[in-house]
Amino acid sequence: MKSYKAPAAILFLLSLFASVPIVSQVGINTTNPRTTLEVAGDAMISGTVEIGNYNALSDGEESTFLIQDSQDEIKSLDVSNPTGAALAYIQEYVITNPDLDWVLDFDTGVDANDFVLIAISSYYDLELNTSNSNGAEDNASLPYTATFIKGGTWHIIADYPMVANVDPSEIGTWTISTLIYSRDLSKQLGSIDIPMSNGTTGSASSPIIE
Image (cartoon, rainbow, N blue to C red; front, side, top):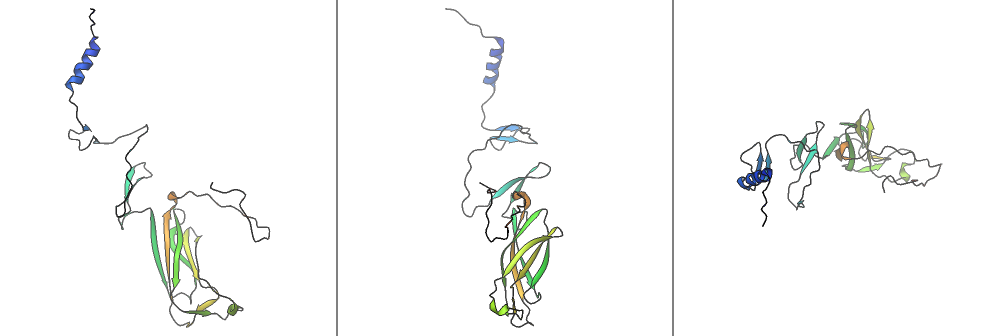
């Protein structure tokens, strides 16, 4: 029977592994890891990181997001905190004592370069009547509320066209709810010119999203 002599390098590795205890927790720069792997300090990963066990949120659970700032730092965003940063904001504007029911231009001061502002609901609290304008008696009126950009900020317009307060001396109030979110959360597709050729119908040559 032939005998085989293992190379010294293999014997050294076997003795090394035999002397290393098998542990369930590994710490880098710490002697007391609190989980399977704990890195005490900065870490840079140039390859792919795979994360498993994505557990769905249930009703009542708080949700937290991880975001990357302009300095490439990862930060936690807790949207359950009413005073902290959020992915979007709901702001209610209560505009009192406009000219009858007419708000021609209210400047919110919200930067249009960084945010999008949308009016999601509105109501006016006084009884209205058709105005003295020519032809007003032949028209119905629906509330008109919109947002627009002027001078780099978002503005609000609100009105019931062709009608006004029954009692012009009463002080009316518009309550307008808006949704404000960062432009970072949406893809800006730009403007599309639509020539109608003096017609009333039209269609896109191709959809912007398929």
